[in-house]
Image (cartoon, rainbow, N blue to C red; front, side, top):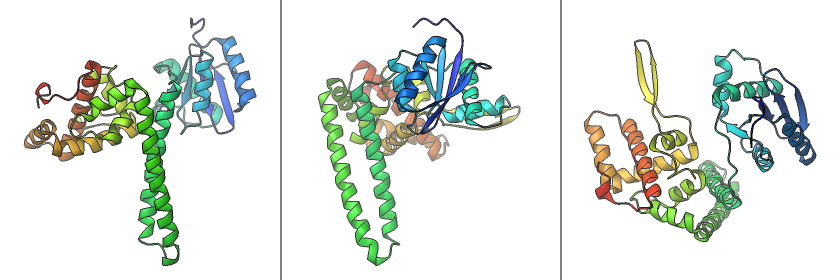
Length: 316
């Protein structure tokens, strides 16, 4: 869509309301977060023809808004709230209301120009929802298992029954994930390639397919930044602190970490790389982080080249 203005729009999302701000000093209004309100919002934004609309990730509340704006062919970006809060502090915007938050989002959009959001197709979204649901069920099962040890005897039976139900639900979701992946040849091939790597199991492969569609399309630096395994400098004057990995997509980073733990035991290439780092004096967590980044780089290259694991091409 051709842009006829340089206006950036910020929208603060809550469960029932949207606070909208046009530009840095422009019009502001509220609209109900329901079908009629969304139709009104689209109509008014089309009249403005913004360069970009900026929305924070709000635990899922923003998804319907993103879908509506994308289908209306309005440019929208979903941004990390931590980045926006840091930007607000850096620019002295410390007051906080929903409308001020929307104004900060507009300013953030103009200054940073985040990448526009692309609406995933229905099957991609469904796979992502299944993977996330599996993660939620696992968290509930772990919580119930932790309660069981200290629960009074008279309610232990209820907890055990709930754990059995959760396990059945996890099995059902696992089957749905497998069936969905099998229905899409592209995903099936990608998952098979990923699982050819010693240490990368079914859960890691499914999570990468669902939540990292950029795998194989981005270069090594971009994919590391997307996942949050790119080390960030922390230096000022004479101060030199350890670099850290942060940001990115925690769900992807978590499964990649577990895969790396398995790989440094079962994958000769990763094991040798890990041991070399330890011999050079690296701390274990630093060595694991480096191996995570290396594993992700290898996976990215494998998907781009449509090639399964070949240890002779992955020198340690």
